[in-house]
Length: 556
Image 1 (cartoon, rainbow, N blue to C red):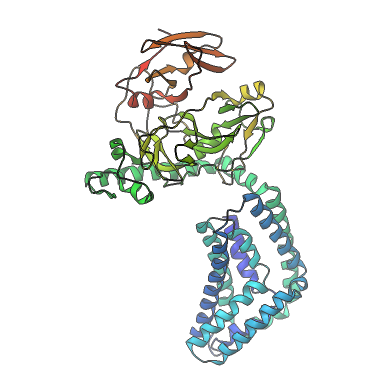
Image 2 (tube, rainbow, N blue to C red; image 1 turned 30 degrees about the vertical axis):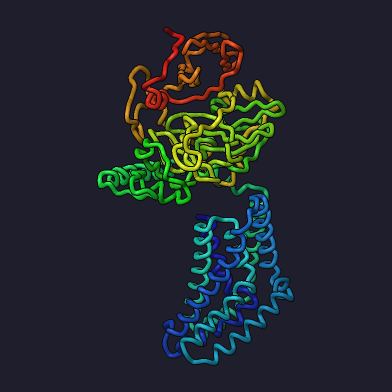
């Protein structure tokens, strides 16, 4: 909201640029001198000017879409532009003396003159379109828009751009309405206006420094942490409920879309995944529900940044996935994973996908090396029995997060390989691995990492999306350690495992040894081979393994 307000302000200030002030009579000159209202000619000129500015900006934005530019570049670019903007606002002659600006001004003036001589709507359009390059290159405030629009998403950038154009058009309409006398007063009081502009110039310099130092994200986080996140939570839950009801209605009316006439896959998936080979898919996918956010609406982290674990400032009670490599130890706290659900990373040269589904508590790390090559994973927006459906970006095959099985597409029938990890509290991590690296909150996204969007969900028995089956032997959301022994799914209540103890259980004539020592879990076969494991809420494991899964409870 703050940048939208400044965008509108930047648009208003555009008309006060030194080389724009002399052009204000052009706007006024198209108004009726005998009436204190805005004429059709003035409106035409101002609208065509606004369209010209929007098209020019979108052209620049389009050129950046073909390149992957790191966030750090935009951080420095935006900050530097704002600082330059502040300097030239305080010292406007520096801007007007730039040769490039002078040449643009001359070319536009020639086109402006030819259009102004034509007494027609076409001539008014030419006048407005000719003013576009002048208003964008002549006024340094326009470069605030470039500093914010270019690094932003297309939707956010358009909001800033329309805010700027609105402020500019509104001020021009105001000038046209008041007429020549108002223009003369504005020009006459240019010195007073200069003082005001210098104040804004100082503000822009401060904002530029805030951008470069990264304090803009810290400020946004503080705002979200102060309680704004509660509003986000409410909105997300309303969206989730709305999508669920919409899907159920869609299912009842048999409204589906698919590449195959026999397919009953929900249309929200086929619409989002047009490159997926839908000729082969798991029938369970027909019961998938939309979780609310669409494809990539929950953004996976593809370029994770890390910092020293000693710099972690959140609560020590926060759980975290810990990956212990031979050369490095990386830590992924739940307070970040809850907002992004997938982190595509590399540990000891092994490409991994660190995944977490907040709705079913499933924490799993997968190897990203597939039969067709290395891939990255994203969040599809779909749920199966309240569990996240992932997708790989190379083939758009769909994968169930809690099992690692491909549900549809090129990789249908394949299963992702587990990667060993530990689940520990950040307090224990800091104490046991002081040299570890922890995932930074500098993710490139503004999220309330100090709050939980699913606050209270783990403590009650309710569901946003109820599973098709509930096993009453344990509380639905109790966390279990899950693994496979000889192909048989095995689950163990995590909190029943006492630190320092060793346990043994059997399945399919094979035995397994479970040891918990210093907060770390180890599961090995009778031959001493390590067995990878993951964590999941009871209801989620039970609904998937009700036919062949076994439970080992040390308490019995």
